[in-house]
Image (cartoon, rainbow, N blue to C red; front, side, top):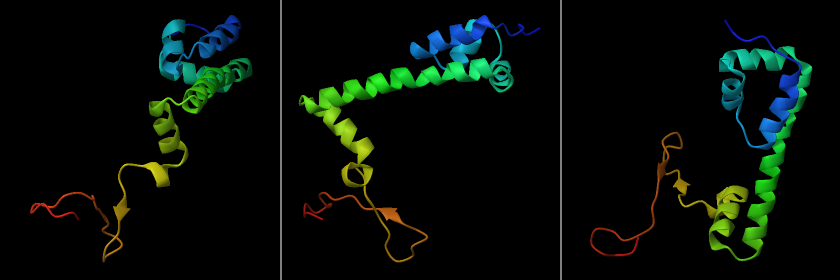
Amino acid sequence: MASAYKKIYAKQAEILCTLGATDAQMAEFFGVATSTFYLWKKKHKALSEALKAKDYPDEEVVKTLLQKALSGDTTAMIFWLKNRRPVEWRDRRELAVGNASAPFAVFIGDSEDGAQT
């Protein structure tokens, strides 16, 4: 039998969110199935509101990543650009040739005979 929801769970969930916990981890913490936790989110407004605290750790990571990128950390810079400007910075580019419903990827590099393509 699933555990009954208690008011204190909203505050506990808020704390867990600020620590980066997922819904599945919180369900495990409360000793219920993930499906039960999802039902609780729909039924209990205080819990739904508490789960907004999930944004906090994400925002902190964004700030830290930006600081690292701006300080010259090449990996952070690449990660930032690939995610913020994927069209310009992705590694793979696709090119539709002929039939637009059957595009294929074109990789620029050496051909079998050593000539540049």
